[in-house]
Length: 372
Image (cartoon, rainbow, N blue to C red; front, side, top):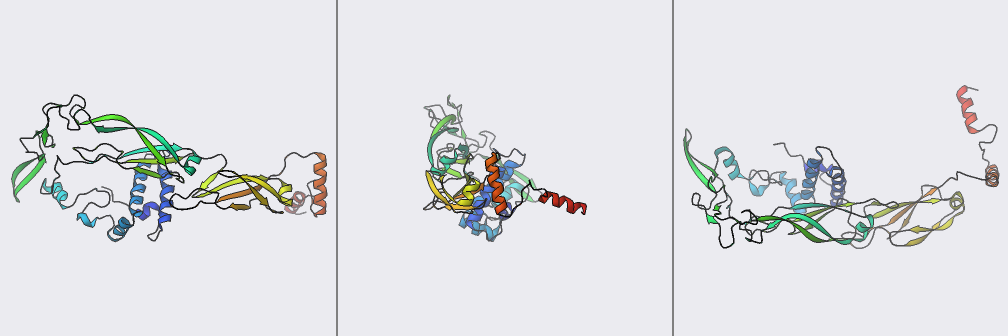
């Protein structure tokens, strides 16, 4: 098994990284490696690695434990870690000797699997929030047999070979002594029960595939790559166990005019030369309305103006981000003769040379290269 990479290294951070830095790094990497966007062979593995690192480092308790013990979970002895790859001493004995560790009751309730769903929404839906219905395929307990797998009127029987444990013990005499090897019961397949008469609806599985409609509330301020958890909306559990959870990954479409960075909105507004030189008052579109913006005389291209509180509502807080407006001075491409003459006069008054002079700047530059 490949050695796990340090979680801080996975996210490209130092151990002193703040919660905001961890969140920002996760969003960036999740967007980069998400399988819906990145088609590389290792994208899915990297995406899972990034998510695992974030799940630990974003939780203050798990992070403190990881900082002290690394990938080893002190609550599980010599294994476990944060991903559950190893089980502890019992599983280590099982690995070498085929038994000796604690075994789970095969008839105990078991939690259902988690599901993941990717939802693509419009830019403004992410800003203001949205309620919608989605349909997902998932396994649920069979209504005919209530998840038992047995034909109505009957019930599963305890296996007579393993007596419900799901395991068989084989005793072997070795040079090291008498060893007990445990393996899955060959009579019941490790389930601990035998179904004599199977349910005709689910074929004895106790599960059926269904299309389930789920109502989703997307909070205002959600960003691209965010993850919504819907508890109990995953696949049904086994033997009365709880259902898993549904994780919704949010993908946000780009906007034709606005760009987003965190809770702030950015846009560009064109200005004429006259507006930039003389000043003006112009209308600026925001996410909700049009507002007036005063342009001071002598404004240069690339200047930013801030509209306070006109950005995205804060997802976990009060207030909104800001809108930043970048002005770009547009040079006219078509001028009539009168306009050209006025610009010539302006250039002359300002002491500038135009391309129409006999010795332009470019002529002088050519002569300098020639050594004239």
